[in-house]
Amino acid sequence: MGGFIDMQHLHEELLTHLIKTLTPAQIQPLQVHLAPLIQEAAQDIAEDLIAYAYRDPASRGRGGLILESYASFKAVLYYRLAHRVWNLCAPSNGIFTSIALTLSNQGKLLSGAEIHPAARIGRRFVLDHGYGTVIGETCEIGNDCYILCGVTLGARGIANNPDGKRHPRLGNNVEVGAGARVLGYVLIGDNVFISPSCVITQDVPAGTKVKVVNQIQLQKNDESDHSNYLGAFAMDERLHVVGEIHTSHRVTVLDADFHPLPGLMLEPTVKDRHHLQFRLHRVESGDHLPRLPLNLKVCGPEFEITLLSPPGLSAMVRHLLQASPLIVGG
Image (tube, rainbow, N blue to C red; front, top):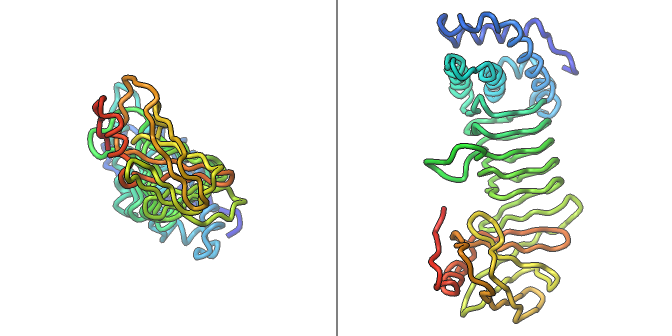
């Protein structure tokens, strides 16, 4: 296909999709905006098509085939139209909001992927095998990103999430594998690779590859060959970290929101290869009440690992801080 797109054909396709999806009453207020809307959406979609044809070997570079028959591309096409309509919204006129949601819903019905029209997605976006993917309202995605099926770019909570920024922000050239979950207002840097089935709840720096196995979130730079994992548990009033661990590694207790827990000191009592042991001390009192469950961050020169809710850690810290009640948060 190269870089060639028949723009006249693409314009006709977009107009046909609008006519088939919207009622005459919905099309009427769009009349004055229709020409620039289709023109601008077509430019975005043409770049998406070229990127898809270039990056997906199964398409054999056939942009026309992708446009006509790839269900996941329908979600992107309808998102581009819906997003343009959404941006026409004025506080006193909710008709464009309704039209944008109608277009977005049509893309969901055709593809199985749900992209909120208010989400901001950069240029040359590829949604490959996108069934089950959800991209939330306040999500931001940079240029040249590639996302597979079953991905959730969503909020941390389930119901009654607060207004404001509650969805992730992805940088440029981010790849997200099938079934991954990126939750909350976390920042994913440029050139990040998120492996399938990851659950990401904290910021990921640029140039990072992320794997998650069981309770461990492993982040490493592109040059690192580190592929081993760590475990941690609390027992007999001691915190144990075991695995490929070194005395130079830094260990930090995090609250449920992945913020370092203030007022807590880790005193090393055992420093062996493959085993670090700590006694926890409360060094200050205050009004800060940590949210459970607690997590553990282990930082080395080439990688960063977050152990999610190690067994016994929350109970041990709760006992240590029992003078102050704790708040359990999800």
